[in-house]
Image (cartoon, rainbow, N blue to C red; front, top):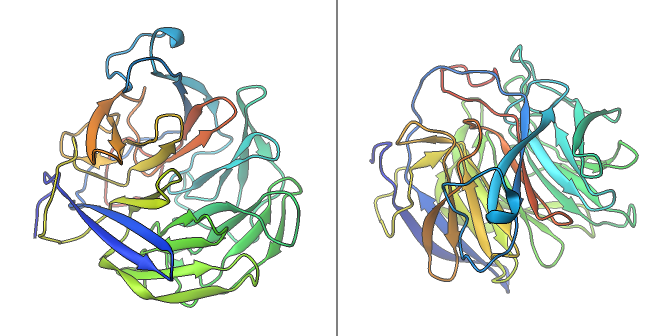
Length: 349
């Protein structure tokens, strides 16, 4: 067992099929309780390449002077946490979906962040079923030449969903609902592989949402979801999965676990955080979440070459149970929704 102040992680290699290698980095954390505040704002992280190799923690409001800064870009149409935000290349937008609303109910509502106006607007195409704590990945299938979004698992009013949704983000329609061998909620996480298939891991299963180590695969050709023989080294939920294209590996950070084999340390222990890969830096940005220092604004960068973490620019407001989404056309990262502090009832944003 380990306490919430532990900042260590374990690196494990797993082979999935013949060619997919997963780099697993396990953060040892324990969920604590507290109070919660509303957060309906979205924030954009400005990223510019300079000769500096990392994003400075102390920054000004001048974008050109630094690699990074956070700016407010407005409010979503409704409060939400444990939702998903997915970049849509077809129209250079971010699709913000599902989650828990201000009254604790599960949402099917959809918002869109538009890069063209730097604003958030409501979107008429709701999900077919209210869904929170799910995973989402942009995929390409035979249904359309345009990008589609695969929503995997999650729950609706504390019932784990046993099927996924293939969603058209332009028309706002559901194209297919493939069934999952294992129904999982509580932020199971997914990564798009170089094959175009989707790997998703962990989550909570059963009536008490017990953590699982199982790994499932979505086949974009058959639209089937397969339970793989390989599993993660430990069960986990409330973790992050980030695919690093340059290395063809996937980084798994955070979550709730009890491992004892330790390696290098992160700068801050955290769970219920968010993470995103920054291609121009070949690094992973981790932000927010519940952590050992009591400040959910803190961020850090993971370097997959040196396997080290360095501090980065703080977010403008504390966030946990939120989303980070990289926007390739502008080099920005959009942070939206979430909670500011902890409490027993994690449904209310």
